[in-house]
Amino acid sequence: MADSTFRKEPEILFSKAVKAGRRIYYLDVKRSNAGDLFLTITESKKRDVFTDEAVGVTFEKHKIFLYPEDFGKFTGALHDAIDFIDRLSVCETSQQKELSDL
Image (cartoon, rainbow, N blue to C red):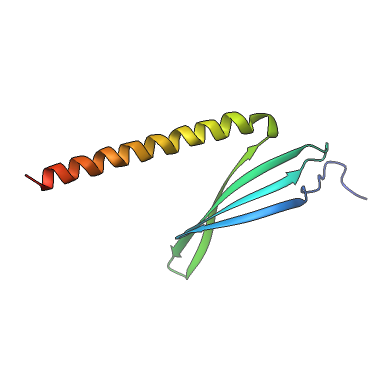
């Protein structure tokens, strides 16, 4: 007899992986059981594990879910954060150059 509380994992309709050192970011578009599209962003981080019994590797995963009604706000905030980092980096590089010129 099937368990009525079992929910099928949403099918991945689109997937893109971004490799960044020991991290991989997965951007997956899925459809909910109710038919709504959403985006999951998963960070998978490689961790070396050292125990008395063995040495191995595990992957630590963190996931966020974004729904279409929030895309504009999210991308706007992401662009603002990236612009801030870019401006701060330019200022810090400029300050470092001025100090090295002394």
